[in-house]
Length: 153
Image (cartoon, rainbow, N blue to C red; front, side):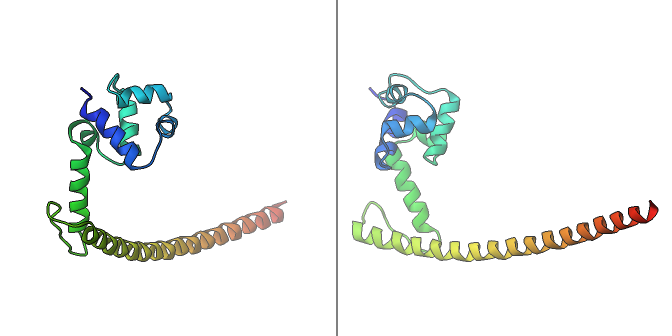
């Protein structure tokens, strides 16, 4: 019987449209070694486990202990329950309602992202101004030092 880990990495790979070859390259291992993980023949060392967890943006606990479809359901619940306040009972939903709510949530975060990015642009501009100011002071000091040294000669 395959382990929860083996089932989870296979589900994640398929759900995200990756081939075993894609994953093996990303992890820096052979395809057959990765295949052995999915088939429950062998288990990865901690370094590879961390890479898999990072690649799929999930915790090691999720990979090892939980059925991923349960984890995904939980993450959907979390996303939907965040701003804007939307809730849906995933045991009694229809796909069009879920899709509509997820799209609404996506638009909310896209707007939030635009706001954050514009704030970042302002900060970058401020930093650039400070860097220019510092460069000007440095260049003036350097010019004064060179001028002073020429007078001493």
